Image 1 (cartoon, helix red, strand yellow):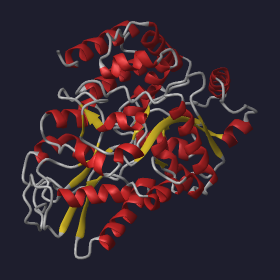
Image 2 (spheres, helix red, strand yellow; image 1 turned 30 degrees about the vertical axis):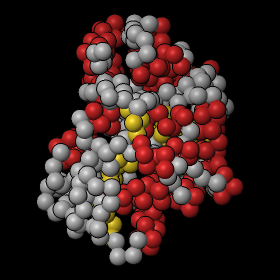
Image 3 (cartoon, one colour; image 1 turned 90 degrees about the vertical axis):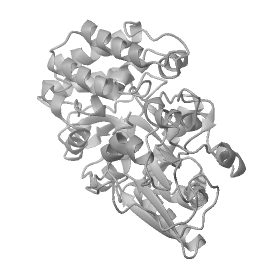
Image 4 (cartoon, helix red, strand yellow; image 1 turned 180 degrees about the horizontal axis):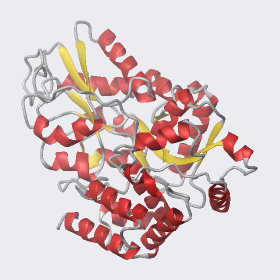
Length: 431
């Protein structure tokens, strides 16, 4: 999704044009540069696991490259998402930037010729050996911009997945067991609703609602279903058993008061804050919240994989991409190397991220160990099912608007599924 936001980000008010020209003299297509500045864009909050780890990576990079400075420019997720094609096709492109993975984002830019082919570097520097197959899927794109094969256009240095966050204190207050089975989860929701407590934190205006929907579908799906939907390895029918179950169950949960009708206009931040403040006992969302919850929650809380499903939304993390017009590509490759080093990976893990190349014995925080252990469980069973908005460009906005209609009850489930089918079919590449 736009792993969209999938993550809690700090939005910067910086202007894209202007002071982005680099103090360098290397050519944009050259493999090396005499530049003394590495311009880096990313949209992670400074206190997030990724923000902390990457800040340390900047220090490490400058220590290993005397005289070279990193010019870090914090951007908002939406800012990069909406303007990347324009900026990357100009002289103002950074040397390296964080970008969202998937067909509709990094895949689209690769197809447009805006990203550097990293295949040779991935092999020479061993990035291909450090990343497991499930994580590596979003690094490679074919000539049509479809992930999973072809050339390397990005490199993640962390992974992410969704889970059930639950307020242990509220569960204990109402005498409810941990939601480790689907029956326990739905029984808890019913019990909370009966007491006037809306159990599920939700956000219809952003990614949260569509991830509830997608997870419900995944609970009735298998890997071939995911491959058909995400990788076009078969026909996707939105009126099949999985999608129909998801839509009807989601709508039913709204009627039962498990999801508030008022949540149709809320954003992901609202859902997260509702959980942090102890108003919502359950939030289904991603590991990108983990560090913030650890820092801000004033109650005992826990996590569980979505019960009764082998599959869940998740993937390798957002990608480091090197714009085609970057002036200092060798420096960019060196920075990626450092973010994949044991030092930075171990730090990322202990700060609440999901590292892809850490030393397990170096992860000492108990909660972090649990977070990583659950991810390893998913990896072993090939359980990462990517995100619902990835298959086609513009599908995120369609999912938002259509899911809002399910929440408000202004659209039937059949019409909802019809709308998704139409948008998906229009966007799938024609071969």
